Image (cartoon, rainbow, N blue to C red; front, side, top):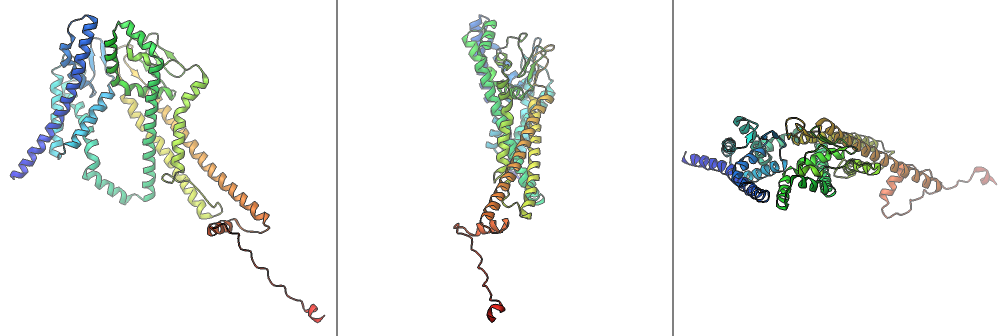
Amino acid sequence: MVEKLKSSLINMSKGVITPVIVILIFSLTIGLFLSLTLLVVSIEEGTGNLSESAMSMTWAVFIFAQGVGLTFGNCILTIIPLGLTFLLISTLVCLIRRIKGGNIAYFTGLVVWAAINAILSQNTHVTLLDSTFIVACKSSCVYLISLLIAVFPSSSLFVSAKQRYKQICPEYIQKNIRITKRTAVILFGLYAFVALITVVVWACTNFGYVNSYFNKLGMQNGSRILTTIACLVWLPNVAIWALSWICGSGFNIGSVAQFTLTVSQRKSLPPIPVFGIFPDAVIDVVHRTVFYSIVPTLCFIVMLVALLHKSGCGLRIKNIIDKTERESFMLNAIEAATDSVGVSALITIMWTVVFSIANGSLGECRLSYIGVDIIESTRAVGHLTLYASAVALVISIFSILLICGARYCLNLIAASKSNKPVKFAELIENKASNKNNQPLPLKKAAPRTVSSKAKRK
């Protein structure tokens, strides 16, 4: 009994340690950065000591990273900084895995995390859009997501479910699901990489706009550097918008600005430095076509590898005359088509979720909605993926059949030149058995018989 009570207390202490350490790390990092930023701004702009409000803003930013909007006068900020959110979840996942505990530890950590966030929401001078109860619910969701990522893959429930899945599901279905999942993850990573590269290109080519916005705001060098670093927490949001832009859908800054491959309206754009990197319209048709073809080209290459590689679908046929091989090839082609559709569906679902969390508002009227049109952007990404997958599948099947047909014709020509009616299947078998490339054995001619009339003579 004593040992059980001692183990429970240890697990409860582990559950308390995890959220406390994470909050201390983030509070210290964000607090120091905000103090430095406010100090530099107050010195360069000649205002009062703004660093006194650094602690209050630290709590507000910490809660803001968990999905709670902020209000600064008439400005309503609900664009969640996904960079800070991902960093927060990653830290929680690492600590939960490091400080191992049982169910008591996980439940205690959830309660402590929600309680601390509720207390912090009452100790900030920044107005929050949500009540204390909603703040606790949103923070609990963040902790549960981290707990799911950290614990569920190694839990007994997941292991038993995986074993049951292997027992019930046939091997060929498991293989197709594995191919679909792996290909979709690779494509998702490539799309994200393309989006980040696009943002870097924007920042390099539109540096002049950013500088003009800094000049309009009258910011000095120190304020510019620290503001730029602070804007990096919204880098994933801008990268998500960039993917929508490069796929042809684009994004809007409220009702004052619109950015697509063919349209760029920035005249009424507020002088916020991060808005300066947004791109101009691509006037040249060739350049626009190149931008628009990046995503489907990557998808086409990945799908070709997935369809033709041995670890993937392994589409191939050696003997087109053999009925068994023809049936096997047809089944492989059907499975490959199913995998292509599955990859497109997974990509569409994943980017729908990502697009939905990247948007927000920066005001009440003209800037009430900033980001992408979720339906249009999802449709653009999903259609490009589906078209590229279909083209890769058709080209793979056509190329395999063309090569096999050409091989069959060459073998027929070789057989006709040798004046020997050899079947194509026999040629394949003899070629496989004759490894040293020795000439095929010739049939012995039948001995000639002497007729009866010749014998009489």
